[in-house]
Amino acid sequence: MAKPVKITETIFRDAHQSLWATRMKTEDMMAIAEAIDDIGYHSLEAWGGATFDSCLRFLKEDPWVRLRRLKAVIRKTPLQMLLRGQNLLGYRHYPDDVVREFCHRAVDNGIGIIRIFDALNDVRNMETAVKASKEAGAHVQGTVVYTISPVHDIDAYVKLALELKELGCDSICIKDMAGLLTPYRAEELVKKLKQAVNLPLQLHAHYTSGLASMTYLKAIEAGVDVVDTAFSALALGTSQPPTESLVAALQGTPYDTGLDLAKLAPINQHFKEVKKEYQSVSAPVEVDTAVLSYQIPGGMISNLRNQLAGQNASDRYADVLAEVPKVREELGYPPLVTPTSQMLGTQAVLNVLTGKRYSVVPKEIKEYVRGMYGRPPAPINPEVRKLIIGDEQPITHRPADDLEPMLGKARKEIIEYYQQEEDVLSYVLFPEVALEFFKTRNSNCK
Ligand code: CO
Image 1 (tube, helix red, strand yellow):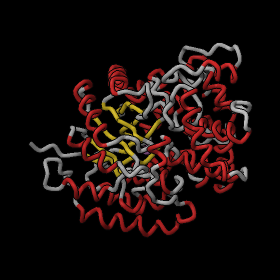
Image 2 (cartoon, rainbow, N blue to C red):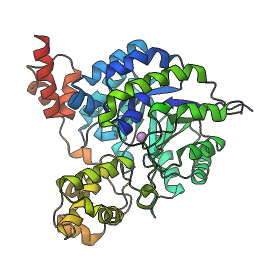
Image 3 (cartoon, rainbow, N blue to C red):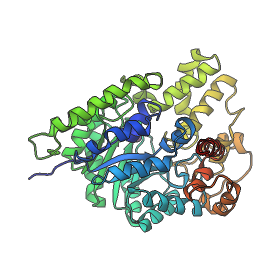
């Protein structure tokens, strides 16, 4: 019986976020957007993740304008985005008024599918975003962030997926940001999730460890409905498996995607051409097996290397690699994904360079230990907790319950630059960066 596999193309979001430091310019997207729309993808991931920050900070582009321009030419394929639950596209928790407004504006500007995750798999941090996105009319995909630890077994993932279904999610994504999911583990996970949850199931993996294409194949045989791939010009390494290879692998089988290799080729050629302009920001495309021993995602590895190089301490790299899993265990096994990956990485570097573990602790880690990012997957080591926050008691309620509404005040603060309601959201997420952007935008208009 035919069971065509559907494909989400990640070229406009995760692929360049993973390989080109999120620097792809809107013009390089627009030049090929209509051709991509003709391929017949399930969806095109084109917004969210780090793209919003990168647009404002580095490209001096308005991310909202990018979204509207893409939507104007991509009329058949749903545009998909990645959202970090209560963190939206930033690195901290935002109050509910901001989360609700953001989800509504994203949909109003053209997003059809919103994939929502929380770094700690804490459903309370996804609740407001899920409900608001549903209300706005999006297809809402709830996410199970995949990691390996003594407390992350398949039953825990099934329980989480059932909670997401209960919240109203339309489909479930397994997010393997570090490339840790092995083929046979994927087979088991997909089978159990399909059986217990009975919602469309999507798999998102990174090629970092060299496993992802094999993992996709076993997941497909086990019944996964959609997988994420990227054009080969921007695939492999820390990005997704190549689209064309998967299409070819499934041709003539019950899983045939129905996509046309002859139509994919010229689009890939476009990205091969524009690739030359992005050489200075390109990450190496290689298999990094450190992830299999240390569970450190590719993006985090390059961050650690940069942090050490900045301190003239590149020779401590091996010590830091060994320190990360220790810190992770002591802090309750959080999955290593934005923002926890950066936070734990910094703590590991500090523990190694100071020579006295937890003698210097960044604000973010203190807040994490206070419960302000949500519930860690396992209890935090009591001795380490004491080193970090002393006798203070962590909160146990939903972190955003403590946050005051922000929109009204923010709107007043940017009144002289205000051009559209979306500006308020850009400003709330990235205050300094957005202000800087508004100033250049306004001077360009004069
Ligand atoms: Co990803």
